[in-house]
Length: 355
Image (cartoon, rainbow, N blue to C red; front, side, top):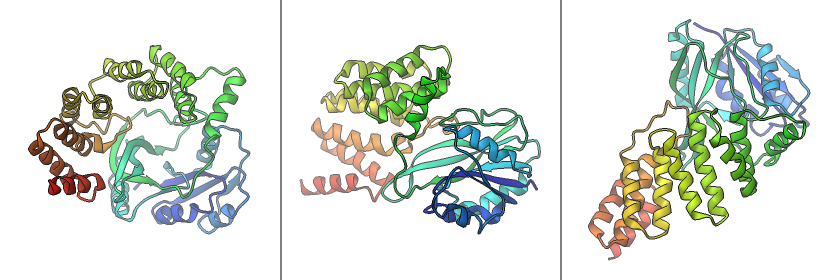
């Protein structure tokens, strides 16, 4: 059975750390904690779980710190978690089962990463991340922000999930400042970092600059397909904010030049037409979303609701506006099957019952 070193970088995580380590400590053979400058009880809490605690100067580079944590590992595989991540109780059995059955030929194990949740706590935003990585020099982190270990070798996908559940808010400007510092120092961002830089600009409402960065990324021949598709969505949101609706729609449609339609983008196009009361076109795109297979192994961001619940709910609205109440009710009931607790579904149900 393979052995695992849990490698973490932390700073001022007294709110999260005990919860995280308590969820995983009994399942790994070694815990490595690299502290990058905590001024709270983080180090004290970490010492309750491990003696492998290291201080490391923060250099505005997540990969640098993570690679240092990996360098201290002595087990077969390195596993990473953020302090605000947690392995839920129902995942622990699967975790142990995978350890017992894992082929020694596997280099990287990808696991689901749930980062957003609906009103009932069910995942509403997920994607796969490299989680167990063979402990050797061949596998190291790259990227100062939104760091990644490029998957290579023998990669397997697991249905084990790690949940990201932050308490409170972090520094919203941290990532943008790191990118701006890199650019000021003359560094040319590689395509993946260019995409994430554009996203950070968008989050900071710098829409024109964000659109410019993302357009250049989309025009380049390099870059991952999933990032290209997601860049179309972010770029469209920039154009909407700037009042350039046609450019926004063009950006959404452009996503299909990179690969087959994604339900997430189909729902965004459907929303475009719904908000402009072009219900027939909206229906077309929401139905297309329903008929789009979900490829959870593409590596891209997946919004599960876009493959059933959202299009059902929006088709209800479209048909109601067109006067086809029976069909509208049918779609609302389908949305209710997906999420019987949904306030939107329940509101619609009360509306139809009142007629």
